[in-house]
Image 1 (tube, rainbow, N blue to C red):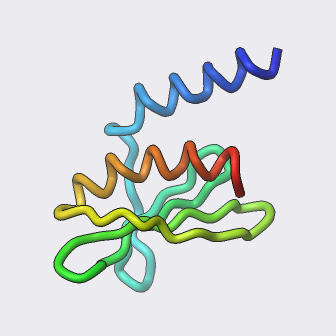
Image 2: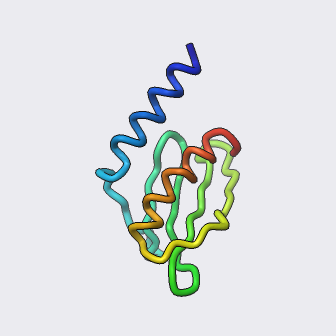
Length: 88
């Protein structure tokens, strides 16, 4: 069923997230594409923020979260991707 498939995708994302290779945009931001979602980490004050975009619909949303380091932002980006899969 679709629910089981979705659970498998989420499990796979969670178990492989820290091993993913992030790319760098021409603007110097870290980004990656996962399950149809683009997630970008950008400078926000002295730390970092996250933006997610649906690659098909082009809808985009900046997260309200603030992360003190880029590593914290990468971990937070997973939750942003999961959120965007359901809402964008």
